[in-house]
Length: 434
Image (cartoon, rainbow, N blue to C red; front, side, top):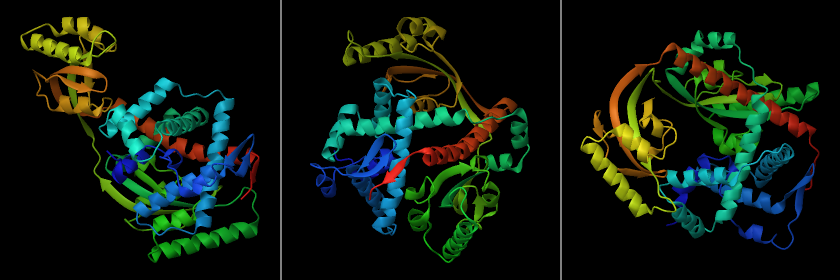
């Protein structure tokens, strides 16, 4: 039951490269007895073994994507900067008391297993067959979750959104684009240090012009980003992923909307340096209505006093009583172990299903209005669903405002995150020893 390349890709999509599965390599084995220090970062260090592990992962990713790799010196430079920045954030998390409890970590790992249609036991076996330690995998996930939680805590407090901001977005061309198309954007940052002299800025500007010229002449964007970009997504080829217009960083959102697929914008100057963006792909049209389902359910779970077989038998018995005209409210109150709905007749309200696990959504969507689903199992236990009604709901004013608020928050979060990362990097003591 090896994981295979497809599974590894799926895992890594949910993580930054730093928390991707880190496998052992022959080069790393050379450091087992004496692991040298490649950087001192405030009160901590970066070890050669960490660098070599990441280097293996990046090489594998680049090979998988059929991209010409840059020289190792470029990859090492990129990775060192990423490792340093991660180290700074992890130290900040410790100082600020940010923690990930074992229960949250277990849920995150279980989610990975669920996404790949495995139980935890099967997942552990698959990791072992690919030479990966389950304990190390858990700790990699914990590190990534720590960093994400720290970022949310530190960056959210820097974001302020007024009612006027929301009104301006609702009335803007962005919002119309938002409901129609999504854009996949490539981003390259040629960084310029704060307070750099005029000659340094001019040299960076000339380099940016040359990069744009090369890209317009057919240079591969991913290869260029990996080799030259200082952006957070450099080692992923500069790919920012799919975003609607309003979710694009405001610095270059206007330019992106004017580009054709494959076209590269002129360099854009900011306090961080020079930004180069290319429209990698575009798709539409967005949904202005939502298909919603009114449903209720009963959940029963195995426990210390009820085996999995007994749980399945119980849900079958409940289903039989409901099919024979049993009172759903009474049975939900007596048996359901979903605390959010049990005392409310199992009612889930009108929903698109986005908040539910895939197995639940699949069963709900396959059940006709006015009927019961067959008993089915999800990672939470055994369910019976009754679908009461379905409707197609136009997005009301409140929903539109909520969406606008989320867009503004995401846009500003990205901008403030980059500013905060630059601040903590500038303030940290870093001694490179390569």
